Image 1: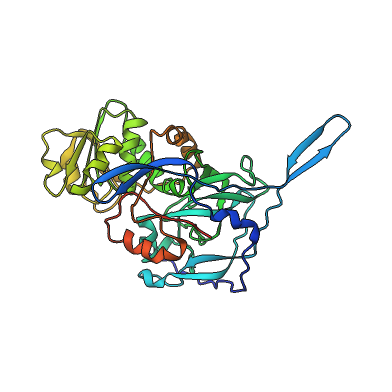
Image 2 (image 1 turned 60 degrees about the vertical axis):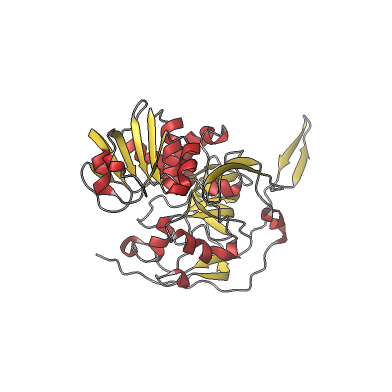
Length: 388
């Protein structure tokens, strides 16, 4: 039964961006990540960043010794730029507001100056009103994935501090009461437990491409009971989740064989991610393969065919579409501890984000980014960067 949604009003006041954040407009940090060039070739690119968070140095002295301490005098405005919608619908409902109130933080939250964000299918499904019964009240600032800098901490925050570079999925439950104020804004508030320190080798744009999809990939593999020595078939291997399932299955879980499907132009990408068998779904029916798999991870909604490719006693993970036994569906729970666990694989380069070649999209092109994502042809993640 649909819940009756209440409506609130965005606070409109003159916006004066602070000069203290001019350094946040700098490009990517030093990193390597997979990019898809054209339609057929995956390549590694390296981008450098001049981004730095500068905190003034305060020096104090005592009778025993002089000690240098960092001061936390970061200026935070009262208003910000943010994308929002006041009604459910197509991309036309999205509006860039210039005078949205910067969200307050709770005791267990941090305030993040957003440097990059990313889109997921759940973002446009939510905007279309598919989760209306459990959604937060309108108006909504969309966005789950975030990468940025902590500029304020709540009184109960234990580990993070101002100046920390972090990333995460800001919604603990993806469709059950997600935050009214998401990551497509200059600032966002999030519980400390949902974020982790950004991998040092990744840019903010690359880090923003990871949280929801890497958590979905990992949690799905865990729920399927996937373990070392087993085989897996990934349906939609070039997508945001699928590209991470391939890598995690191989590098983290120790798969004996990874097969994945994609269109013709993305087969080389699958191989570069670690797929042992790249299947062109426009030419082959994966369900007719003689070899069956311990787990089939379906990220594209082909449940009826997926169950024909699994071994007896195996598992089929279904993210979208109809569920046919032994398939099962789950909705990811955001988990900062999971990100911490996976950070070493990211920092070693064994697992890499995949960013759609049409991006990153600048902040004022969010409508174009949504439109591209909704074609269903995006490769990897659609990233928004830079965010003023």
